[in-house]
Length: 138
Ligand SMILES: O=C(CO)COP(=O)(O)O
Image (cartoon, rainbow, N blue to C red; front, side, top):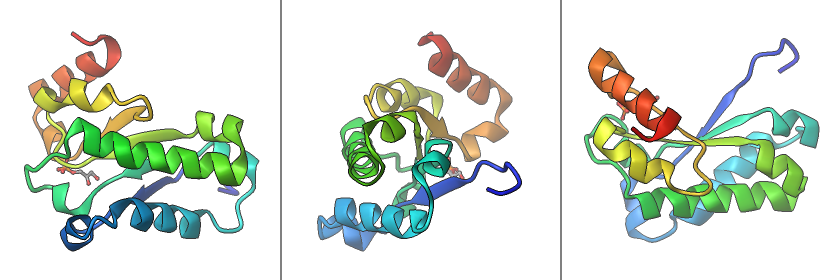
């Protein structure tokens, strides 16, 4: 951070934790631990990504509701710790098997500012479509 690099703080639960319905607490605890020692000013410029481990590279994308549930909880936690203005300025992304077909639904979440795209970015047409959907919904 001292050198102006913007880190992407990735949090996300494994399948067993989701099945035990502990994913929200697990992810907010990961966020807490990651931001230890940072000031609100430093946090304001961060990018946080919710990347459930079970969705990365598996073809299994979180539902829009599941993605929003965790991203909303992450933003609320940021607000508790650093204040609402800081929380509002943090970009929160969802990552995990995002494709053009799932982009609009995921990005509809009020606390989801963007997508962290892995495999789909290797297909230029697919990636261009994701970008268009993110930019103007088309
Ligand atoms: O982890 C990711 C990007 O860092 C997501 O990858 P996929 O989109 O291939 O699941």
